[in-house]
Image (cartoon, rainbow over all chains, first blue to last red; front, side, top):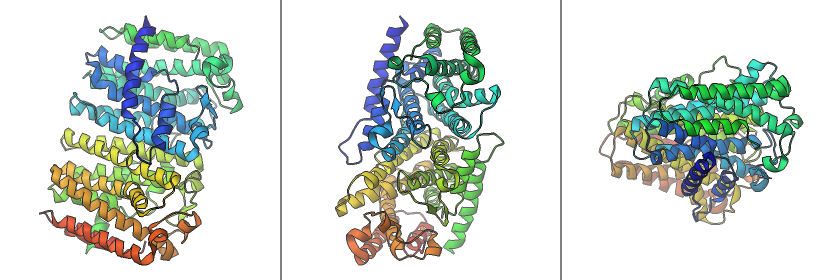
Length: 290
Length: 290
């Protein structure tokens, strides 16, 4: 049931992403090609789907929010491209394919990330059919969530700070992983005209979902299936990354992932609308294999 | 006279930039520090001043446009940081100081560029005192001007395309250099509520100013004063860059810079308001030494 819902969303998101990142016949299009390569490498589109589901939960007509949904996915992709670069994690594989810089060279991968990030904000600004005040508020929220006190801040901790406590680890996860999921949920609420209390609950949901999501990611990196994951197992260990697994062990990690998932589901209980899709997605992410 | 006008602007812009990029006591602040290092390395603030002057020309109250003016400078700085990276131009010096990656490492320089670009859009969205429709339209224009069909497209030509004709060279200049200046001028017009015809004239002005500006840059790289420039002379030649100078020679380059400056001044003649500051800035940039 939920799989067909996700598949339907995925097709619409991909078709809009395709249109928003169309190749032209200009000589400068290798950067669009590199961006598209990573954008269509098989992402699950979880973040845009979360945005669209929150938007619907607050009565939004879903087509109007597709630009923001696509922008969130473009931003997610930019972050992966830059994260894979040799000066960051230096990862050669992403979703079973050569990472962007292995395929197009470092310079073009750098520019492809810049391109996706830049165009994402333009795509948001080109949202039609919604009050301008909401669009601006959502752009402002999005920028904070992925900026220095958000996703980029998480990257900085991940690359430059020695993580030696549970508190620091979860701070890093909160910024690096949860912040963009939080932006997806909250932008959905804002665009649909939800109130401040709903924004807070959406933030709480996304924070818990993001933490569960990241811990499962850590577990899959250790115990997952190479073919399903599309990348080598054990890359965290190879890169000497401090993960939940390393700091807390398998059992406590799994217990925490379940606890965070439970918290996320409880946050959804506080909404009066139909959150059944979000509920199923939340549960599905806990037992995913990739 | 114009120097004191510029100095007054510069102080206000720097003070706003300082506030907008304040260091916190968070552990992830090395990225803000790296961003500030490049942001306050001695830029002339020409682009934000152009934005503010166009805004005033169309009756805008200048304080409302300062966020956009600062965003333009943050975007300019991000482009320089990423452009200097080893996988791009690999430049060790910028404005007489080690470039960002020499000072903070490649990873942090990458993130500092990402940070400035991301926060710039947030700063735009946090503009107060102007109609939301104008703010969104300006964000949309800005994003296009610096995206794949704008500044980033120019970077792609510069790094990945063999430039063998005057046409291709000017296409590259138009995207890499003029596009952000065009965004500055046009955002000023849009934010002040100027009409479409005024936007077109502003585009024409900025295109010509940008071309003159870039040609003078090329000439200074060959003939300039090391101390004034703050970077080694001849870096274009070292990097085997195709510049106006290389393709057209000194005399024709200088003649073209004068012609583009004349065109820019003629565009200003078409406005009924007081463009005297813009006129002086345009002439000053033609005879600058750095």
